[in-house]
Image (cartoon, rainbow, N blue to C red):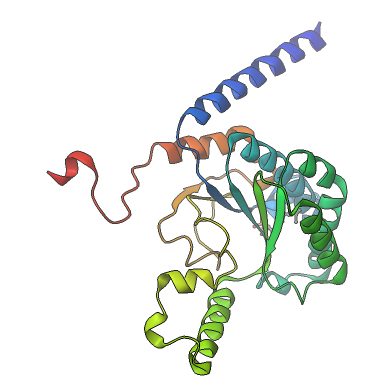
Length: 264
Ligand code: FPP
């Protein structure tokens, strides 16, 4: 009897999720969603678990959210997995996070391939441990022809370092005479960033109640819609993503201009 009730409740919940998904698909879906996945440590602490248990649970959320984003027709999903500042954390925690791509891709690569997801990475690759580099490289190779969602791991990523590197490359070309200073414009700078092949994010999500950017995609987020939630990343689920997209679909994006009747 209890089993039946639980099953019926689950069916009802699934149904309403399915309804929400189909409603969401009728509206404008963000092309690129960027997520600052925060709150893993607090999730673990609330359960008297070590912080790394929160990261491990957070990894499972990445799987859930990737699947739904792909199903909704989102073109790119960028997840901030490790910042250039995160090296300051205890070695045990850093080592654990560095092993996560291996575990995530070791477990879920077959289903990512089946879902036509393309895996890419942005960040300083060379200073990652070899096992992390190898896991990402293997997944990128195996999914490079896929045409569905682009799952972009921001790993050992820092936006200021990214912009600095772009400036250095441009300055070098000016010095060598292949560019002049008047060629330097916004488009050229965008082309030198690690996101050169992606559309700019339409929607930024940050979980856990923190309201800051933490050196994440500072250039790319100029006209992005922000959505913050108190939900901790391991608790973030399909219904939270639909809440964020629902909010996005009700925004009035003006890019500094005016729209419709406001112009009269
Ligand atoms: C911030 O939470 C989270 C991180 C620094 C790591 C995020 C990594 C994952 C969610 C796993 C990524 C998965 C793959 C596949 C690489 P926090 O530790 O700062 O949380 P707190 O603010 O509660 O302490």
